[in-house]
Image (cartoon, rainbow, N blue to C red):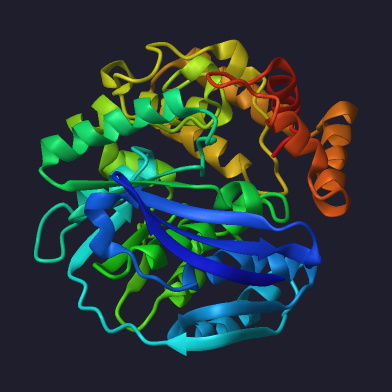
Length: 412
């Protein structure tokens, strides 16, 4: 792969860093990251963000990287450590060679602390834990083009409005960006593995005035497994003057809700966990993530106080939930079931969870077939099925084919 034609342009409203990415010598894809012009002083004009974006996908496709532009010497040095780490994860990543036209060292003096903030459980926990003190968070970072497709502007604007409200109430700043790097890398490597490099790319883009970037850990430190954001990996995307830190690993998601989120009126007012974007709903209250979060809140007796979810849990939907025992998703269901029993809450919900856990031990033939199709699409088909169906979505909702295949587990 070749990274070339690096440019930084601006107009009346935005500053955009862009570069050509040529995977396997094929058609060039123009990758970009844009931010509001008022944050122009935050932007660093080198190719480091695009190296972070391309590294793991190129390890997946087994192609070397040449960069026809300067990159951070610290980041380039760290790529050896990154490749050594992730190649041991046994997810099909192979160490490659990286060459660059030149290297550069950070000479700015950044002073701010930012965190990626989507109004989810992990990001609310991170913010609430770092809202005070000398190293408190000064900037939220929200990216259009990661969990919300670029085509879905109306839903992104809804989420953006929420983040703006939280920022205003908390008297901190919010940085909103737009990028197509998610669309580019997800064709080559599952987002669950590639999103760490994408987040790092945004941090590297803003590093001229962001000194520390906090990434909310999604997995408890004693339960770690290969994943795009990982405490051993996140820190390796750092440079001479900008550090990236993984935080929150002292708790799993239930622990974060128990300890902090369920006790925060701010979080209960604005919490968002859904990635389905169904009919532009803030939280669909039906998908796996929504149902798990609602059950966690119910276990803490605060679901009725959560403003962004349905007030009752659909027990029929709970019974249909599938916990992949190989990926240890069953632990989440078992923990919430134990909490509900301990607190003596919602016996019908306990029954529904127990039913779905037991059913998940013996997945039906069609479930195994759907998983096999998903694996084939990822490993041998360059995710063409996923891309074909995903592009059929309209601006405000998923199409019915996407909904069916996602529900069946074919799309991951």
